[in-house]
Image (cartoon, rainbow, N blue to C red; front, top):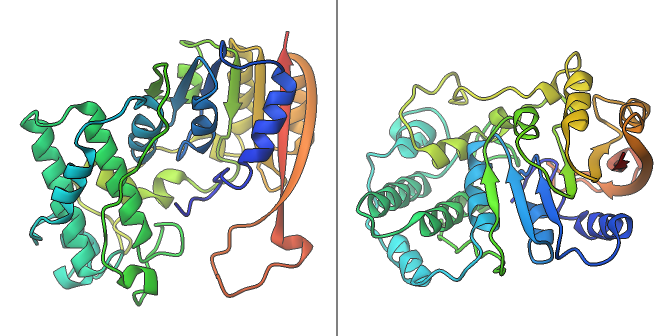
Length: 334
């Protein structure tokens, strides 16, 4: 997925640095991914650790991680369900088509008319399968995660859903094909939460805590509101030109609240090793983070340069300003 803040390209760096600090085998360790997003980092460690705790407040993230993290055993008949959903006759009475496609008269063009209808058709059928108990929760989240990711591939946006493009870009002109969101199988169970991080930290404990909070003023609930709508598929009145829905506002996106929230999280964390992904464009400065974390144990810092996400795919990247510097703040807590 095109996802702001995704750690996919940094996954090898993160794994190497975390392993170097923790040392030895990880198979007796509990790993927590507190601001999980699409679950990339949790997925890396899922096959190596005793268990993964995954958390994110956003609905689309909860769905993705219920599949990629909590699902750990082979699902029977998953291919037949994918095939069935792909072959359904399209309906034109669904929420996405009526509110986010031009053909319905909504004035919005997040998807082509055909793709909007197909999202609705599949989404409604998934709910029908669940209500009739033809599928269990594991299959439900597998199919729903598959739909969210497949829909994202044909979305008519510039990576985020805060706005749509005036004309359909080439990927958005392609027909949506539901592709399976296969997950890593493992021997141990894992758990996924959808809670405020500062509340959840008081209820859990483990060995390795990985933190990747929002680092600027952009709210994920606004930037990915369409994915939340596909996940929830509830009735509401979309607001404004972009069809926004009500969304959670993170304290980590607020300059006057972030330091207090961050220190509270670190203070209450019952974890030996804490890793914070942040970057040079964050609301908190490198020194502010160091000051807070150093209060609670042995502090260290690793830095990695990487290319920024390009919204304009035609624009070349070669200047220093085209790179972001990822800070991996490390704390071995007393």
